[in-house]
Length: 124
Image 1 (spheres, rainbow, N blue to C red):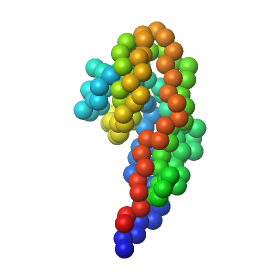
Image 2 (tube, rainbow, N blue to C red):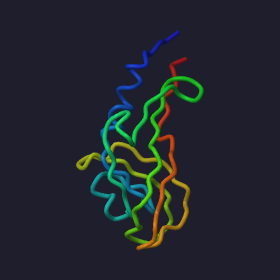
Image 3 (cartoon, rainbow, N blue to C red):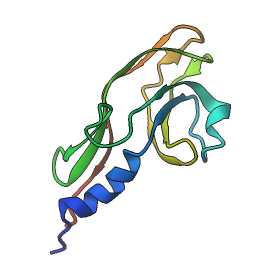
């Protein structure tokens, strides 16, 4: 049976935790440059596990997961459906996930609930 240590799984999650921005997007961007065309707003994040925004912990069923803490206080910069969240470090988009599809209105508050960004299962 294959075995992966927590440290091996955390390597990928640690890269996600280098992200210093989450963008609320109307469509899934293909790369870092594509975020600007579909962004409805964003939040600046503190990089690193346990730094305030990111938490790496045991997975819900096995393996390991990374969670983004709730974000609030910013306003939308465009209007549209929040279909994706894109995570970047200022130069590289490292991860995207589906969002709730709620409408974001330019100039109105936009919040992100705490969300599991990724979960890596133990090998089987």
